[in-house]
Length: 122
Image (cartoon, rainbow, N blue to C red; front, side, top):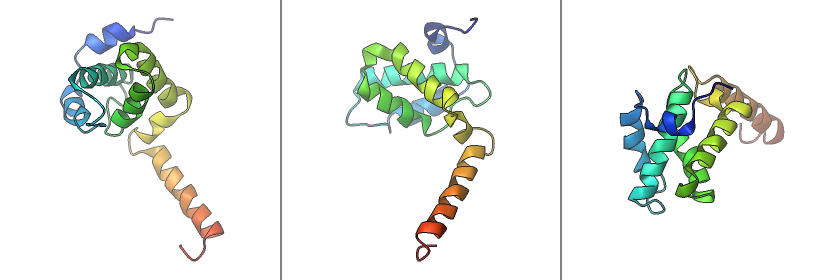
């Protein structure tokens, strides 16, 4: 289908490499050893290269980190596929896009629900 492989996406330098490096040390630091952090780096680099319009945004590290903990660092390609799936198929990429369109909508929906069901809190 013309999509670049995980291996090539994870090996190609990304404009976000420095940001990713900064954030992986903060991602479940007690759970990830150096090898796991490197695996997480490769997954996030591949995501950044695949989603060129968004790149990498802080917060993606925890999405990938959860999948890394559920599976393992040996299943990097699977972790990558899960992150891409949740971002693209389920629309979470809109939480990270320019001006965070889905985040704004979600916050508005939350405010309306709080006001409707918990008026004393609003």
